[in-house]
Amino acid sequence: MDEDRENLLMRKEIIDGYIAALENPQELLRVCARGSGDSDELRAAVGRAFGVSEVAADAILSLQVRRFTPRVLAQFKDESADYERRLSAGPS
Image (cartoon, rainbow, N blue to C red; front, top):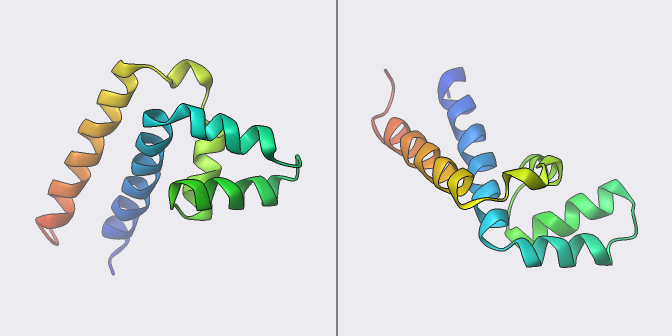
């Protein structure tokens, strides 16, 4: 797999994780509130809750609360759709 495609796939995975968390912030808070504070355990719990990889779970945990707005959610959805189009087009 070429490096550009790999980067697109990884970025799309992270953006899709953001979308999942922004669409259900209560679940993210519930998972975090029940965590032990251990970062590995919390990353795994977020990954299970949202069905994402460790990389995407880490990105979700790094989101700033100020990003939890409808406008940012719409931007992430647009970005995800753009990655999907680019990935569907195949190699450049």
